[in-house]
Image 1 (cartoon, helix red, strand yellow):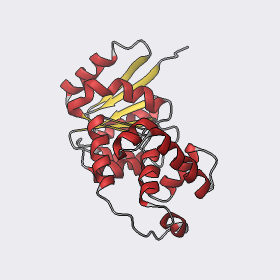
Image 2 (cartoon, one colour; image 1 turned 180 degrees about the vertical axis):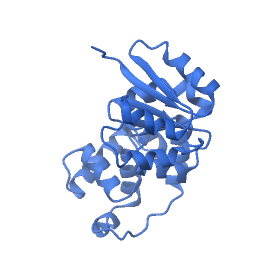
Image 3 (cartoon, helix red, strand yellow; image 1 turned 30 degrees about the vertical axis):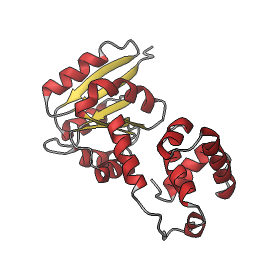
Image 4 (tube, helix red, strand yellow; image 1 turned 135 degrees about the horizontal axis):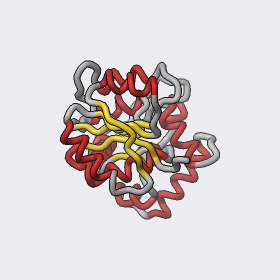
Length: 219
């Protein structure tokens, strides 16, 4: 019985695939079960095989990574997906997350983050490299709160700017310490806001807050 995390790698550069495989080959609990050099090969492979995690490039021939994500939306038993890309534009990151990806790692930092990313998304958690987190943080800090057209818009608009910021960071899986450091407030203050948010949006826990934020397109 294979108790390892099985991984498939998709990229149009063999040298990158070889590099990622070399890094993953040092991990006892990860097993690379194949690779693809274009998007169509990815779809074809998963029609006959399975893997726990797919490390997917965006810019590939025949079908690109976005087209692969679209195809997966109509397939059963799809893997958890980490985008490994040369581009780390915030719009692209939000787009792929909305299409089902669970992690995003720039190629330039793949060696540093890919193992942690695989292990984290395998557990059902999102993963972002440090530079992606920083970009998301800057976008968050510079984005004014605005009205929404969803049914819970009134509730969202009742949040203070600080509550809105904290809710968004919670949904992006920042820890209490990381939120405190980002906003320049103490961990106890973060926890107070968290408890108030749970009451205000009428959920049971932090997971409920994250679901609320995603449902209402706060992230």
